[in-house]
Image 1 (cartoon, one colour):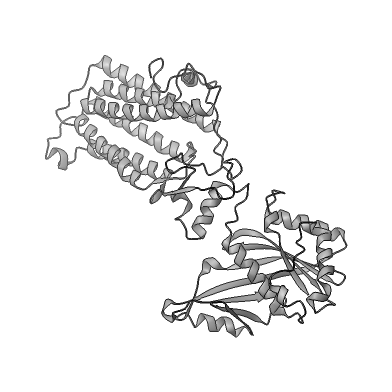
Image 2 (image 1 turned 60 degrees about the vertical axis):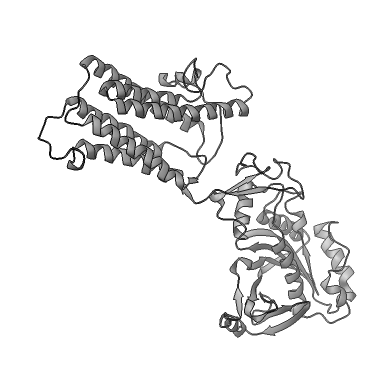
Length: 488
């Protein structure tokens, strides 16, 4: 006789083990009793649904059991009736040719596999249940070979199972066997029990105290309840804060019946991709306009380009080449993606402003500033660029690779990082300083407008980050401002 006992309620609510750890734990228990491993086993189930044109919904479950490798087991569900069938391997091919009648939903495929052990007259199988590569739980199958009538040996099997699973084993007869206790046990009886448990696993979400928000998102996607994980936003309240992927059911104090609210963030794109696109554009657009193309200036004589325009092109190119290299080798993003619409918004801002500034700085009628003003502006630009790079490197070293750990940023041995003692976002401070210097060295009004627009946006970002720092860290320095020392 075979008796299948589901352990899903014990994983991982009490032991906090993974599926493989649970199998290892149970393996040690039965080996300690004298069991010897005797290969592996596999039971799988594909489910086919009848097409709507047939009227009443019919479902065909096709199962395979490695204990009977030459047989295919099928169970037809039609209303309250269940019709079993045992066939050979050609039945699988038959189902493939009946796609106009029955369709296979691949996301419903489920299997149980694991090690197989022998202990005297008993055969024990420890299987992890997976559905579309998602772990669902653990099933234990026990077979007592000398007995063929369930009612004659149920108590013996129950006591044996309790010996290595503990008192959590139910004393109740499995529902399917209740009407077959005095019948001769058949392989199809095992298949029915597997199908019962598979059905329960399919209905369950597999959520436990250690389940993370990221794992819940993956489950929602695999169940076709939501788009891919990066597009999902889960909240505790309809208009509450978006939950971090690393938070767990336990840390959020979620209980049975608790609700999470879902929002579709729309099509997503990688942060790195957006940054590369928005920074590469200004680099190439500025150098293109720097060549004085006829589309902007018409057929102009070969007038000499002032040295300030040459320096401006070099500074502009340096800034955006630095940004591209930082995106590739320095920045560590806490979020993998952002909304796709940001690509068009950000690129439009950077590319069009670049064209506006470059048109005026490279114009044949451009009037350069005095030498003193140029030197002051250029020195300010280069110093702030070094400061900006120093801050980015310090922030990178603050977060270990592959993590989203957040710490209070502090000054390092690099003197440019001393600005951390005064503001929360010195990278923005230096960024604004770079564009102030560029505006001074070029004496260009569009450059000043670009600086003001950027300063406003960065001030908004800095105020938001400053607020988060103070909320997240109780010991955050109270004297710090957001972006401008002693002011804002």
